[in-house]
Amino acid sequence: QVQLVESGGGVVQPGGSLRLSCAASQNIFDFDAMGWYRQPPGNQRDLVAYITSGSITNYADSVKGRFTISRDNAKNTVYLQMNSLKPEDTAVYYCNARKWVTNYWGQGTQVTVSS
Image (cartoon, rainbow, N blue to C red; front, side, top):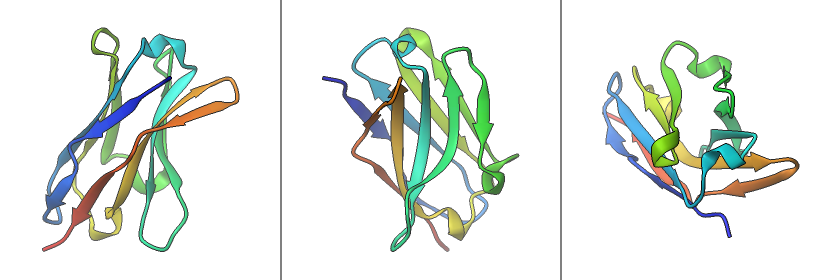
């Protein structure tokens, strides 16, 4: 059973930074890609960023230049560094791991950007 455990969410002022972590219960090389999604209140869950097993990255247009996804294979952990946060970044952030057509999800971590 794959387990993904997110951490690092919280409340931050506009312009601030947070780093989210996603620790996997198995070797992350087992997955084709890992990523972060977010779901604002009353809205659908959308892709924020992903990183493949070959370290190719992709970002939503709304976060390009502000967010950085990375992976530490030795720790089986994926990170999302979020800088220059805006109120519209407020959402529950979910870690995702994909292997073939199977998706695995973490429980989510709340990020609130507010003054």
